[in-house]
Figure 1 (tube, one colour):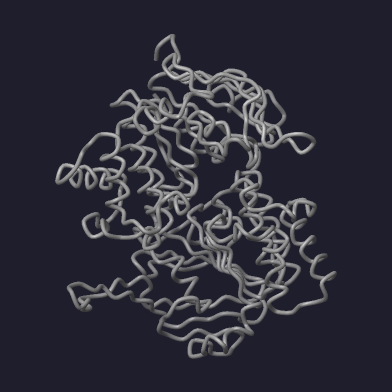
Figure 2: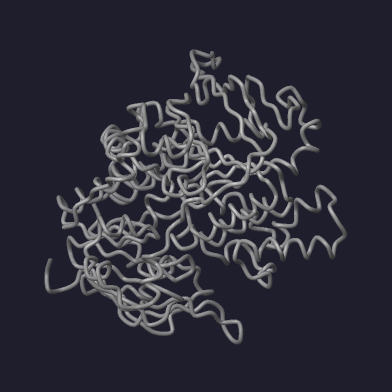
Length: 536
């Protein structure tokens, strides 16, 4: 590290809108980042972490956003309100960024090779075989499986964790001096999370790269960061060395943040009737090649899975990205084709037509992994949450409005915000909106696909408590998909461990966590409990 900071942010303020409706998203934020150092920005969703990071590269929605005051300098060069040509020379070349939601950051019409290669071609002039070789090298570096066959894949053909790895490869392509990582491990399972953090630490050490790490996961901060800034309501309330902050936090908010975590479930009521059961469920995707697209094999995304879940019970599904967890959930809800038996309240639904399944939709809901991609940008929050009530013709207009307000209150959002749109909320707030949309119909069975992945730890605990309370009140059955084993342990009654589309181990939650039998399960638990990254 040097005496002269590589990046200096001083008295930064960010205002959205003007007049009486103006919102100060960031207030007098100051920090420095030295060469080879890792600085973590930590705080709840909506605290201003991402807005601060986007200000560095001038990526806020100007002129809606403006900077009433402040300075941002990189190697002595002022970036705040700098002309566009200056910012273009810095973006990607000198400062790279990994965004929070890869599905909305990747072009849905371009394959992976084109998108990673575009960075190399535009910024470094690398073309042809050299470009292809570098793309392969980068994708292998971030742990993308079967790289050669994945080059032609479109973003929607990859899992959430795989898309995140592609984004990291793009950000690292030009060996930047500073990497801004906005929740880079949010969508990743624990084993890949450990690999990515080790990768970032190794690159930082070898290249002398500085890392500005934005996260809600304090476990990661403790293991990867040198210094930490704790943000609340747009301001930094405390900052210092990681060891000092964790050992002796001074601000009350920091103390609450460190103490917050999902609590294990207490005594549960007896299980109710069986809600969902599957037998020998299979989802195989054909691999087609050649001019006539002949089928030459299959990707066995789900291969022979059987289980059941009763009212008032939660079955947790864990495994690495690409193991088939989300595909399993989609197949259960008849959102993708499958083979095998699917029963809902004793009735076989695997043979029903789309029209036959439709009356059951209100009883079977899903919360998707990427809230921004699943919320219509053209609808207000009230319209999004209330859409299901309208489709299923539940209640009069006044009753629907009250149910929408109630659902928003249950997930910790102000009902007065229901006339706002998804882009006006933080990632964690959008996740809560998605949960409210599912809960408003009072379903019997809910597939929760990483419902807490974008939430900070304090809100994770709130959402787990909310899900548990709603389950007890309405005897809901949950299929809970997650890579966060702490959250799974707090909520699930039983566990399914998946790898490569098959079930490697299943059993009661505590038994699987405390005495796993399968070697893969043991490795998964070890990665969750012993994630080690040595700061510089």
